[in-house]
Image (cartoon, rainbow, N blue to C red; front, side, top):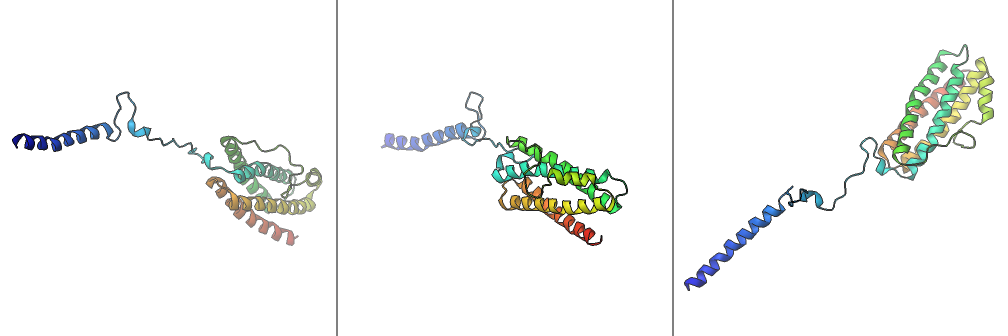
Length: 207
């Protein structure tokens, strides 16, 4: 009986030793003897998200938004430059043209950076046939040739159409986009350019 009692007594002790040994081998952040952190070998893949712009979350709508908005913004800046180059332009239109340039120039740089981060094709060069409120070569030439009140009226008429196209594209990105930063920019474009459309229509009505 004494031997049986001792044998039974060793079982819990042995279990305790095994449990302690296993805990030592599987403890958080322990080393497997080769210098590798065992906690980091659970099979979870590292995040590939770009901390500056969540590139891994971009979808087809985000890419299309960036590819189309870059040349659209570039043409808006060309239109603003054409007006600013003229003598005698009213201060309110000078202010409008300068605000358009100040807003859309940095957005072009951001959109171009996103396309690079997403490994997407860059925005197409040129503006012909792109739709969405884009001016034709003849439209741009007419603005270049116009002077005085005619130039101001033509700029306002063209920019209203141009802004309406941008708002439509931005609304599509707000609805379908996946990248949070791109959607936020699109919403800002909707808000800003909708306000500018209203301002330009009021200026047209006063002429």
